[in-house]
Image (cartoon, rainbow, N blue to C red; front, side, top):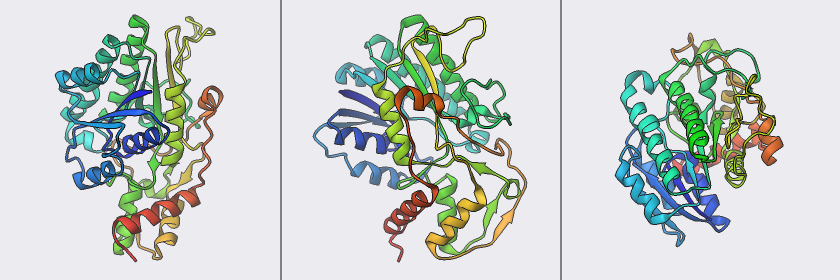
Length: 336
């Protein structure tokens, strides 16, 4: 198939593009290569497949509507995976405008282009952060998500609402995937696994918020990519059992779906750090600190709907995932 992927210099986007090329798809990638974190890492990710004969790359910002339209008009994608976004919870406290440009304006351009170019299926990245202040665990797509605690989370919830509007009005099949703490080789430097690895490798103390009482549904990158591909291949359909008097937030009378995509096995943050220390061969001081603004105590994905509909089955244990991540980290940073 011809699949347009946004964010192909990013963590998940690059891994997805590589896998799609391996299975024989034609991929057009879009990324703005911004400097939210080290652009050299983004270039290194792209270098893995940028010269592939079935890959074309466009350096553009989704907030540039003409550039997005040009990509759709020239490539004529059958399906779209929108993984580009301004990421990060804490950064949204400092630079809210970037979230509006990328996650709201940019996503509107993607929706419009999908609508006008008869795209068969749009799969887009949402986030576990939409659950906000929820304390009922595990998080289910049937739970209300009306109390976000960061602008990033609010922008992702807005994406789900915008997608439903286009599914309802124009029959555009859309599926949102709420990602849960993705980690692994080529990961983001602003996320905790890379921050922990940096500090441990240098022997520096680690700030552990919520006094170490956090737990996260860490999900290995290969399991995430497998779920995204299965979802792309499974075009959203109207839910025949949808009850308008008691609506299910995860489905609709329109061709619309929202799923959690996680490991369904939350891990205490201190246990994750312990595994990192074991694999890096050194221990460091842990400074236990209060909760940060915009953060949540625990995440845990109920992935039963994704298992049921696309056969999603994450199978990378936290021990194996951390081992692979640290092996890559050592190689990338030329550590012994």
